[in-house]
Image 1 (cartoon, helix red, strand yellow):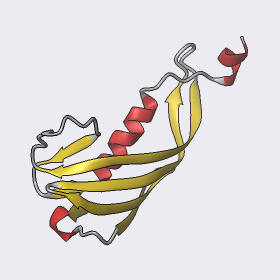
Image 2 (tube, rainbow, N blue to C red; image 1 turned 60 degrees about the vertical axis):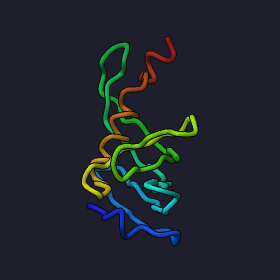
Image 3 (cartoon, rainbow, N blue to C red; image 1 turned 90 degrees about the vertical axis):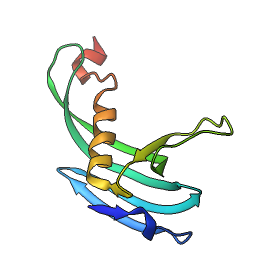
Length: 118
């Protein structure tokens, strides 16, 4: 699902997409300049591996996501520390953003129940 950034206004534009067992639901809202605010909830479960024993585990996720999407290169002129994803085609690729968020969760450190108890 692609959302053209020029369609995003001060009125929140809702979206909802799913991948396997994960739902990515929220809204996009114009913030200022080239920046669009994305606020969403990542909810469901993902399959990953225990970092200690490599056993397959199912990880429940319930994450609040908030970052900005920039229409083009973002130049931080005020030295404010914010999360920004740059888009170079004037569109937010929601499937790509969902997959990126899932990979970020997977890259955290996860243990299975057996390894937690030992």
